[in-house]
Amino acid sequence: MNLQETIRKKLKEIKESKENKSDWKEVGGKLTKKYEFSDYDKTIDFVNKVANIAKKQDHHPDMKVGYDYVIISMFDHEQNKISEKCHKFANAVEQIGSDTTNKEEQKEGELQEKCWAGYTQKGMKTMFGKRYPNCVKKKK
Image (cartoon, rainbow, N blue to C red; front, side):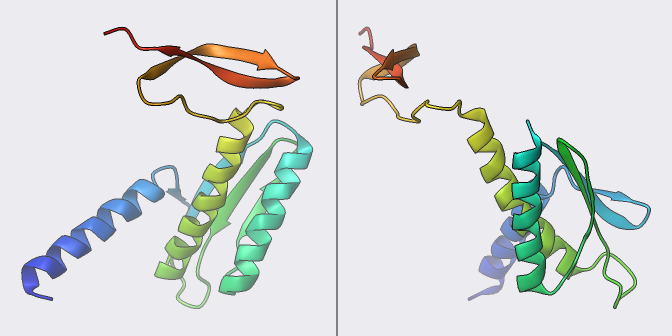
């Protein structure tokens, strides 16, 4: 790999890293983010997923858990600062956080389907107790 490709790759990694941690903030020397949920079950499900990441990475955050929120704070005690381990952990949590958010946006019984090429979605319709996109042919 030549120097130009190496620089492009590094810039892309930096950009992706910043995009993935856009909501993470440095507060009191710790990397911190608050996640919000619609109920306690979803909150605890998220906490358990974060705990699994912590076990796998051997890097354990502080978590403040409420009925419908979790505040995660990361700090590397070995290096006495926010380290690359903290950013790696934040990226992994961000993945499950976005998965959880996407699932919460989907209403119960609502299928996430897309319309065929040449069709566009105009609201939703209900059939057999499930909600589907109402696809209509695009006007030419």
